[in-house]
Length: 246
Image (spheres, rainbow, N blue to C red):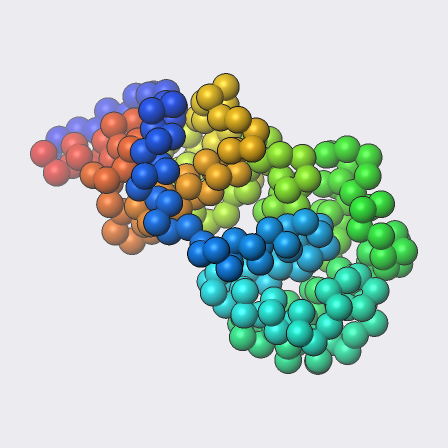
């Protein structure tokens, strides 16, 4: 039986790989309507926060359906949702799944912002990245991933990579994080693999999203398509399984 020798290989995305990411994964990008809709949501931190809560444990399609339902029923603002009936919020977002749990989170979060910051989300986010993140994490139903979605939209992507299930999985498989690694450890490990000097600030979000699409569509949870991966030669998971198959 072959023996897998665990040795450290530095995992780096080269500048050349950036073009490959674009060519291979741009086909999974949102269509024009979805892109415009998300750009509008992203321009308002509160709407982005609500959208992100709606995205928890569901698909992108269901998230957009739930958000559109909420938008049709309410003014998506801290005051409006804080004063809204929780059952009515739940009914409006039913298409997204877990509607009762999410309606409770959205209402409690809106109430907190209304009470502590008089409904002024911008005021809540003043004081720099760390203070803004601290305030976001103080909100009911907001964890590190949700907070970083908002933070990255305000302060840039490279220091606030959002670590979801797909990003965690690819980090562990690459060998840059362990199964027991916490959110912050994985985030720092992922930040280190990108050639930031070759990525203009306005492209950071695009590159990270393409990498996420690679994690989702190539580094699949059940049947990863390792031979298609641009990082296979540096991947701990690929080397291990390659040796076992020899």
